[in-house]
Length: 242
Image (cartoon, rainbow, N blue to C red):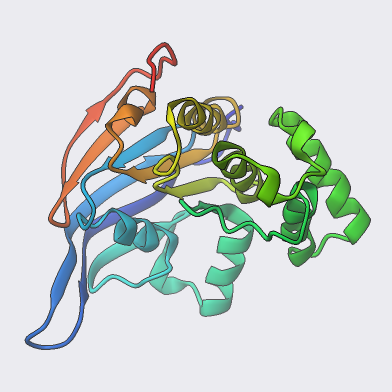
């Protein structure tokens, strides 16, 4: 559930522009974008490849700096964080989900998740116990002793989601999480992301060109040529189908 007496805004971009390249060969990846993302909501950044969705995620996370404008993360301008502070925030308060999962093939599912906890300072035994508890809470404990090579694409993505929230991350950033999944697997993944927002109070931001995800989002922000179009409020009903 959403915690009381906690500020609801998680991140904000104010008139942010991001350029890549050098004089004469500059590319505007993001142009004058402003948005706020809140606890307990699932926000969908919808647009074609090359529209700036992934760059926008990296700006929200402080993984890349804005060429102009201001990025605010957990109530503080990203520019005010030191490199060490940003690394700590990303390790403890942010979770990342990628299209290609990035699971370690030589570790079991529970070991993949426990490793994140160990990096954060937990003892090995405690990390494994916490990882097992998380898998049970997400209703995928039956996968715990399997290796990634034996999992379906959808199962891998659900494990990747578990890994992303292993440290109780408040902000989940997902880049094309359903792109390589068939309909049933994609439904399971987006339903889990929806659950993280609505039952766990996480802020979930999904970048995708998959139109099937619209029915699961609280807000849909359309991106084209680096710009954000009108945000449309959506019902969060799970009655739709992928």
